[in-house]
Image 1: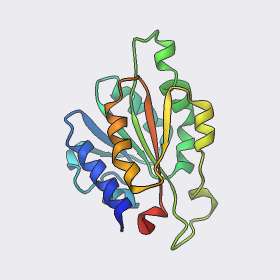
Image 2: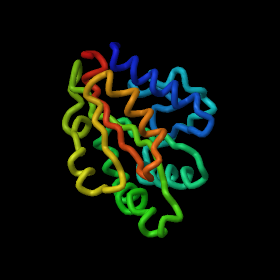
Image 3: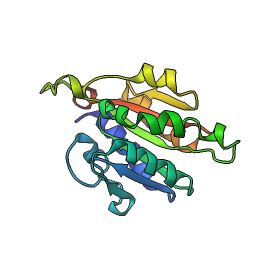
Length: 179
């Protein structure tokens, strides 16, 4: 692994040291994807491994953030983040609006465009839906993490937001071994 992986690990360590953070999703407490390795410095008691039920995960994340928890909701592949689209677009993105500003959720969604090297996982694991989410979400910022030096500041920004927005951070699996 290279600097890209190291910067993801550094960002997760920083978030894991915050008192109000909690990590949920797949490969959070059990090995399965490269995401697991980037969480090595996050205490296990701050992690909740979930089955593959993306819409429920997004709903749980929203509920937890309303209880003043800064949730890092991890969806290892952007292809499966689309299974949570209803919760993200109709609830997370709109809650501030339809609650009259009473609820202002701020969740960090971590996802990745899957690597196609050294093994190609085929079409269902390596697509980008960044532009589609940008078109659907005006209260969620989508940040693509193209360079290692983009990673830590983007996660710091996502954690420290005061503008009432959530953040989707999009990583690139191929960069773990290339950058």
